[in-house]
Picture 1 (cartoon, rainbow, N blue to C red):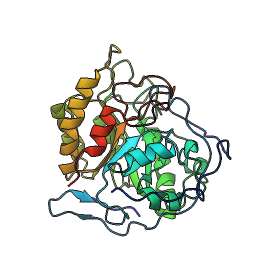
Picture 2: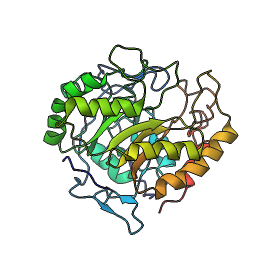
Picture 3: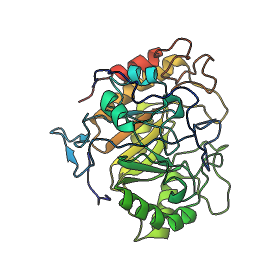
Picture 4: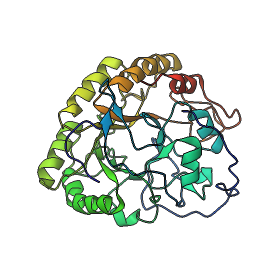
Length: 340
């Protein structure tokens, strides 16, 4: 259901997964739109069905004011990962500290080979959150969203030329159908997930708006009063706690809980990347801040491992190459950060 303005707010034992896994090469499907190589180079395909145990009926906060997802079997799990090639072992390794994941598509990763999402969620307590990535309409994902999904992310980096590249007017025109789909499926809705873009990545499409705050304002003006959503979506590639905190303050002005679709210290406009030491320092600085921030409902680190699963890890990767099969030092830091 769609809510108005307000603050919304484990490790589990591993059981035999024979009933929920199928051999590699199981049934798959296709997507109408996928992110580019900078985010999700070869988006997984296929569908998964089933239901999770509970539907969100209400939202509460903890005594400290931090949001708590009270309907989840594993409450208080704000922390997530933005990655689309998870394997069973990856989820096992992440599950002590990670409560959800997104993969820029509308169905769980094919690499998990799921036949029963409900059982998978009950075993690991790691919730899948689908996304309507581009301006393809909710009908394009209706058969892909797992029964029992509770949230829907929308429009990945619409102000980036290499991402969904959707203008505020286009998003506003599409929004009534998205709202109707969300209501029909019992999904809480996240606004388009805008982000401050390096100048070489900003959209130059006529009618698009590079600045994320101005983009959201234009979107709201174009579709008012039909701009219903439950969370303000955003992404970030800031590299200091101060810069991320300042960015969050700007998004708080929209009056809804903030859902950070993906964040990490990312390559700069000149293409240079931060080193692993800087990433670990940044992660250690900002995760406690995000856990304690009553305005932040959920957040997800970008990302798991490189496109080539056997390659060396990028400085911001949480997962080792598949040959190693574990967490990077950064991944261990992320999983082991305390929750309130």
